[in-house]
Picture 1 (cartoon, rainbow, N blue to C red):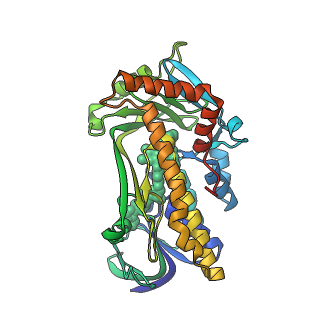
Picture 2: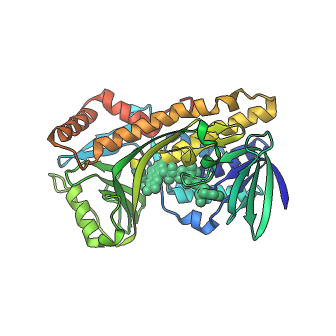
Picture 3: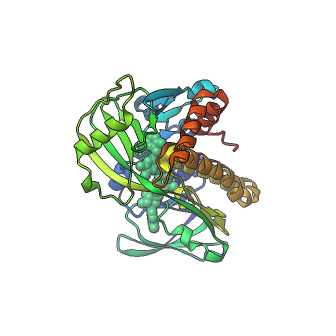
Length: 394
Ligand code: FAD
Ligand code: DHB
């Protein structure tokens, strides 16, 4: 069967769904193709931290209500090392900007409900998506849906299918430049049924490795500990995880972690990756399809949203004013912010983790960096403005 749309979007993650919502507000039709089922994408536990700009954009498009009710606004974070906590007052250092902790799967639920309410379409469970005629002005997407071979003719294709998707690989290798860095550690992430142990997120540097205390709701907490990325989660019993958290988070004034049953646990590897350019003819990559960051800076979802905001604006200018300049500038415009986030995420990761081969010199460098960051208003401001998110014009 043949179908037609202006913008064919691969992937119903934050990037693809936000793009379809922004385009719809401008009267530009799109179709989203997703290879998983709705239940699956609405229940995958991933990010938690939304930058001020992401929150503002969601509010602007009418999706702020549940986030305001159920999410929590944080005006600071704690950096903990040598058994002492040091608060970085994010809002005080950034003219009142803040972050909101609101889980990615709740964002996804809000986006899907809003898009289906507008009439969609979002096709779930599609198989074997392939980009065709990529070098022409009428590219198309071939895929299988409900056992039927389909072809979707498009003016433009948005590759929003995450790091393991197919769209990046559709760009001829000769014009792709990939930049990557892998890290010799991963994160073991858990969900624990317990009250919050702290009002703000705690990022901890400890000789046993990094630990992070985050939250999901008044009775569900999200925590991470640095671990071997090759380790099997089966090697980590619940009591071992709790003990490791307690050791790494211990303070000289006897801070207590509030503990309860662990209801979910998994290990994720981390790496940095960027592809340049983020565009080929009429295929535009956005979000994790084009770049990933280690999670320490909490930037991935926010970068995905920033990319599609630029893409939606460029496509709007094309359809409304016949302008191609913003489409041509898309990759350059996005990459400026992407590389800033790459640096910030690498910097936070390097400052807060133990490296396998680090020696006493390296550890003293990390301590000095932490000490400077929490003692100098200029250094703390630099962390704060990157963490809450630079303005959209970046
Ligand atoms: P994705 O969310 O990966 O969405 C891509 C979609 O495309 C998926 O639904 C996938 O099923 C679909 N797809 C893939 N291949 C195909 C195909 N061939 N055909 C059709 N569909 C396809 N970021 C933050 O900003 N803040 C945080 O606090 C944060 N914490 C994180 C913590 C963890 C543990 C992890 C793992 C990530 C975290 N991130 C965080 C990163 C964030 O989750 C991602 O950057 C974000 O999901 C990227 O969105 P996306 O839409 O680009 O890609
Ligand atoms: C969360 C994840 C992050 O990567 C981070 O830096 C802070 C919080 C979270 O899942 O809550």
